[in-house]
Image (cartoon, rainbow, N blue to C red):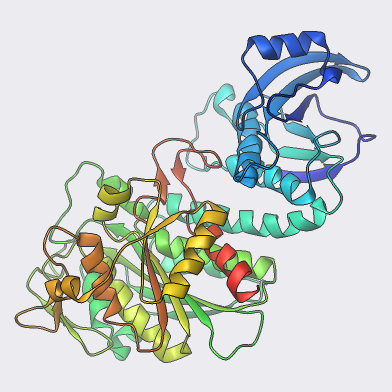
Length: 485
């Protein structure tokens, strides 16, 4: 979806949208349109869309009214994104190729107008690469949104929001791809291609590199697959600092569960078990495209978890890069084994002051929070409050869970330093406790369990059914408010 800017004197497409404040239908719409909108119970609530035709001086116009809610509402920007998204969702396959949004009488500020456009662009993303037999009315026809008479400053703000949209779209692409197309090596190749010319430094560790380093936990997960593991590091150094910030992502490109194999029903969804890695890659792309004034490293551990004759067994003991030993009780608790070695490596290599990891780590977090929030665990109250604020501002919402010694002892092992799972209850917490054992003293750390938020079974305000791109907005907002603030 492209976003263009134009003035009221430029030619308009046939489809034109007006933005309507809740409870206030403008008189210049004409009696017929006003009465029809009222009869349809259109009142201007956020996300409402009413469609009609109007005879205007320049010809017959397909007119859409989009509700933007009430000025001053606490969720004002979210409501405006919803309006832009609702317009695009309504006309995405309508046969119209362009949609003009008339901002002339909207009363919006530049940042509010940019929110409408961001919602429109994000809702317009759809990945139809593998659909070869769509009928005409199923195919996306709407490819452009034209902002007419946007408030002064909107175009400048849009450059930043467009970078955010590109990062989210890249994450959605990675998460959507099937596992026979996207696996550790091809994930790296796709990132190399996308980051070319952006100023991001790319470092890749192959299977031999990982073995030489001693990443026994990560390699234990990968040993059942013919796809070789990778670790990918992405460095954006937009500002020199004493200690960089690290974003770490779990990148299990397909998770069968290994020997502790998952049930067949729904296993196809496990292509998105690399959602954390996808979010890190998308966030780094956004930071580079908008030239963020921050020093950030994104590191992802990429493996495929498969159950062949060489696969890791329940009861095996592996030695992590940190030197700590792990008794593998369940091979389907593989993400923490990947992350623990990556966490150690990023601390030894880059000495970050802050680490935020993202992972589709546990089904238990979905039991706790459903699909509305991601779980947050942190060893630092300030970092937790900063992330909570970033989540509220971005819409990628977080809910903090506890950590503590009572939970930590649940993963003690009789024959190794720890085991990779605890008892049935508190599964998300014991997973976080496991990761905390690999965080050095003095490092502020937060773990985000995003298992319930990276994929949606139904369309949302700014996304279609499928990959949501969760995490990119959160990390970008954290950088804006904390690292650049």
